[in-house]
Length: 82
Image (cartoon, rainbow, N blue to C red; front, side, top):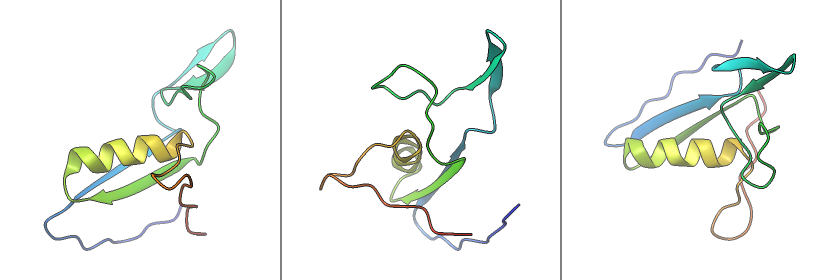
């Protein structure tokens, strides 16, 4: 497991992960991050951390990136390799 320290001032940080809130549906593990295009659990990265001016914005950004949403210019940011 990769661990990092992030120094933040006057900003919010949020992490969302496919490894939490997991249950089984029809014997298949599913999670709480749902791809709005398919209605199925998202197949994006295992975890995403976002930093924004406010915590609620960081939470929205982390969820959007986790399900593969694109930014305002039509592209998302790829996670940094660990």
